[in-house]
Image (tube, rainbow, N blue to C red):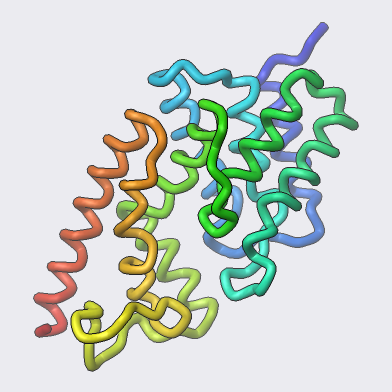
Length: 214
C-alpha cells in the first residue's frame, strides 16, 4: 500500500534529525513547521500540488550554511541534491523529484533562482513569509545575536544618512532585505500575507524610533 503524505512527513522529520550539520536557531524544526503550514495554506488557495510542495517545504533547509558563509548562495542547490537523493532512496514517487529539486533550489533569496513552477513559487513565498512579521523579527535578532552583531548603529539606527549594512548591524537587515520581500512574492495569497506582515515591520520600526528618541 502506498504511503500517505502524512506518513511521508514523519519520514521527512526523521531524516532531518539525522543530518550531520544542524541548522542555526533561525532554520531549525520550528521554522520548517511554520513554512510547511504556510505552504499548505498557499497551496490550497492557489491549487498547487501538495505532493511536490510538502516534501520541498520540509526539506528545503536540510543543508544550510551560516549567513556569513562565502558559499551561502550555493546552499539551496546542495540542499536540493541531498533531499532528492534521500527521496529517491526512500522510493518517493519519482515523477515528482525534478519538481521538488527545483522548488528547493529556487526557494533561497541569496541563490537568486526564479521559480518556474507554481509549486516552487509556493515554497519560495512560504519561506520568505517566515522572515516577515513578528517571527521574522525574532529570527533576525536571533541570527544577529549569534553573529555577535550590535542591534543597530547608535548614530543612525534607521539608515537615514548611510547605506544599510546588515553585515555589521542587525536592524539594517530590515532595510537590505525584509522590507523588500513583499514585492518578491509570487502568489496572490503570499502577497496578501506579506503585505500584512510588512505593515507589522513598519509599525515595529516606528515604535523603536519612539523608544530610541530618533
